[in-house]
Length: 318
Image (cartoon, rainbow, N blue to C red):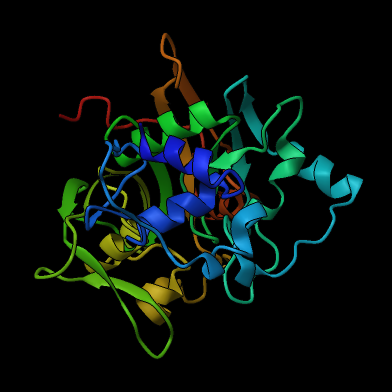
C-alpha cells in the first residue's frame, strides 16, 4: 500500500497539503528513512509520525500558526474564481497574484490554502496544493481536484515531468545571453530570517537554464528561465549569484536589486509564465500560460520589452 493511502485510511482528517509538508520536512520516516508520498508499505514495516499533539490543530485545515481563516465574501470568492486559467475534472490552474502567500505561516492570516473551498466548484473534494510559488511571485499555480490527481501531480513535480517557464526582469544583463547555472543551495538562518545560499558542501544541486530575450542597454534585461530542479528561491539566488539579480529582489541583492532613477515599482519581477505537463490520467498534455501581472506589464512598457515573445525559448535545449 502506498504511504499516502495508508495515511488516508488511518488519519482521514489530515489534509493533503499538511501531509506533504510533513514528508517534505522529514517528519515521517519508514524504517528510519525519509519517506515520500509514493513510498510503498509492507507488513512489518515501522512508520514514525510526529506526536499527535502536533497534529491536532491542522488536521482539518491549514497551518495552525496561520491563524483562523476568515469567511470569504461573495466578492472575494468571485475574484478568486476569476483567476482560473484552466479547469477540468482533475485539475485547476490559476494565475496567482503577487503578494498572496500559498500557505500560512507565523503572522500570515491571508493565504491561498485557507481559500481553496472557493475553488471547489462542482467538485466533491476540496482542491489540494501540489506545488508552491513564493508569496511575491505571480503566475501559473496548479491545484488537484481530487486525491488521485494530487498523488499523480505531486510525483510529477518532484520528478522531471513538468516544464516550468518563468519570466523575469533582471538588473543588468546576464552573460552569456544563454546559459546554465549549476550551484548547490542550502537554507540557512540569519538576523533577517531564513535565507537560501550557495553551499557546495551541504547544499542540494540546483540547475537553472536561462535565455535573455531582450535588454534595455546594460541596465536591465528580460530573461526567460527554466528551473531543471525545484529548490526554494532557486531562481532568485541563481540570478543574484551571477551578478544580475531579479528586479525588486531586495532579499537577495539589497539595493542592487533596484534601478536608481527608473520609474518602476520595487515589487519582485518574477512570473511563472507557463506550465506544461502530462495530464494525471494520461492521454493529453496540460499547457497553461498566465498573462503578466500589472506591475510587470508597466515595467515591460517602460523598458521597451515585448510581452508577446514566444512562451518557450528552450524548445531546442537538450
